[in-house]
Length: 89
Image 1 (tube, rainbow, N blue to C red):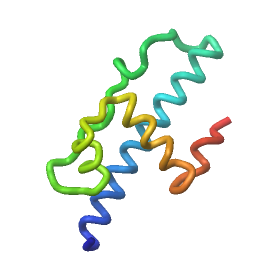
Image 2: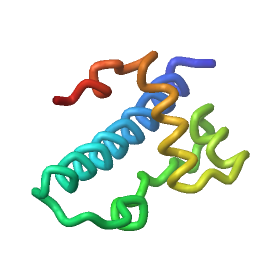
Image 3: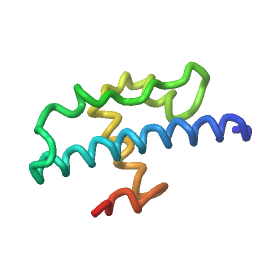
């Protein structure tokens, strides 16, 4: 894998992590009464995947992952690449 592909893959994963954090933040707010409870996966869409080939995006496309599956996938990645996001409060 070349440096450009690694950088592109990292950018895709970073956007997925930001999306994950937004979902988690909204969920915490709804439990504390600061936000209305709603189906977050319908209202907060996952980021678009780039057209170019990146390993992460390729896996998401290959398995035709919807938002729920993508959320689980990035949750599985998180402890290994950004564990601090799992301890937001």
